[in-house]
Length: 279
Image (cartoon, rainbow, N blue to C red; front, side, top):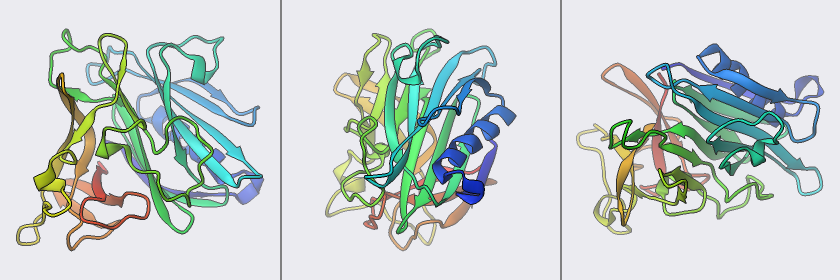
């Protein structure tokens, strides 16, 4: 799948988080996503995209926005999932909209961006530095399209668009699950708050036992979404990886596919890393 690695800054007087939104727009539109809205004449800019999925016939509605406060010194993005598009509505009042904020920066940020026909995933390095992540679009469901036609996931770092600066220490990646910054749309129309395997497995990702490499070979564990009612499916291109003898921004190749290792904000324990597919 197409990917892009680079940085954004405030050259030319345009804030870096604004440029990050433009980068997402340009990259997605070059790789099969239709731009339904790109609104830049407002302080909180909006981007709405439609994807066609792997079948080429689907309608997958996702969005991104910026929000910031000069006084509070935060400059953030937001990922948004929705069930449709109403031209007269704002991004956050689109049908069944669900969103989560991602701390970014006004001066400079590195990024890793991966795009498939059904989802967009990204990681951002900002500030001190710390690493922020987002995912919006479909998962791979453990069901047929007729059984589960719109398995939409929205994952960011924050519960909604909170005014959280990248330096705040309690926010965390959505992939650890069972938290408000990850939502999964179910057939009922409800947004579920699923657990994520293997982070919910105390033997693989517990306080006293952890998954490790074997002879310098690292296992990539799919991130599987579930709750007490069932197992729903797995995220695309996002994998748990051990942090044992590992470090952020490491790259690896398995069966011709490249991955980059990303950490959970500034955390460095064994279970604070994941691998993001980069092709």
